[in-house]
Length: 228
Image 1: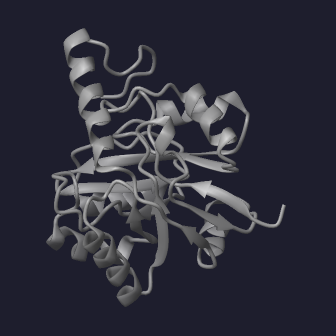
Image 2: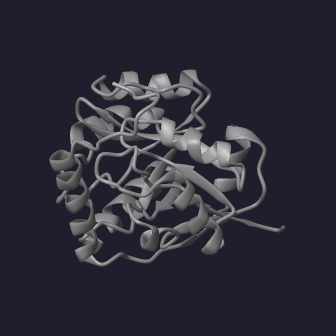
């Protein structure tokens, strides 16, 4: 295999706004030709471990972590990182595990979860990658601003579908050479071929529906190793 197709931003039902079980996410990845899947639930990692345990394809343990000033992405994690810490402390906690630090949808003006501008500049020295295209971003200008930020600071570009449903998976992905571990992954990402495609704006209603459904039915995070 000369190159691997990698999805770096997707969710399972361990996220409060997604209803896709890990096994169904893995099945969708296989159907769509994804070779490596990074599962990045909101302040949860058990869904990623569940997907990894299926053994159908390599799964990177990721987490979309809510800091006190917006979200960061951690990859190649070993342990759960709790939400609510400072941006800098969160980035350093990722690196203490040997992980990779990225920032999702950094300039998305429509998401309250996007990192604050001042915080982004404070943490830039800890960043390894920047998500320069997020399929769920409504504004093309917001993706363009992320690309400009990444290029000006010489960081590695990444893209993500931010899939909260099976139909969204693989809309944006990268193709890289085979890698061995986090550091080699980062080196190979420097030469990634990026494929980007936006999702319909209507897809946000899927997330809203899942949030409301879980609140009304009381079916939130699956039973088991629930993280607080």
